Length: 96
View 1 (cartoon, rainbow, N blue to C red):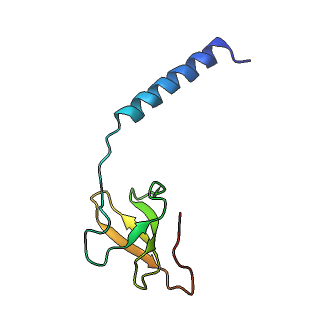
View 2 (cartoon, rainbow, N blue to C red):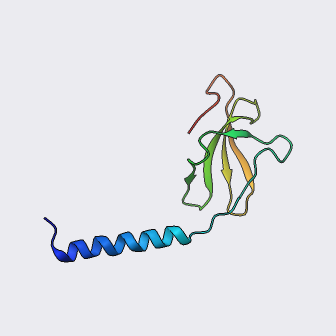
């Protein structure tokens, strides 16, 4: 069983995390489909990985140089870059 100090710490940590996440503002960094040749249909758009450089990385099912999917990078300022274009021979329509 937990002792009283451990229970107090867990309660405090829960309150701090809940408060911090409730106050965290969200903003749109990039709106897919607004620019010509945009990669489209981000797979599971809630699943993005933040790299050590602070940029967000993910995949899109359509678009890229061969129109069969790409790996993308979005900077903190909203600039999108296609990092890798799938060619249909080595992968296509990635999700995740």
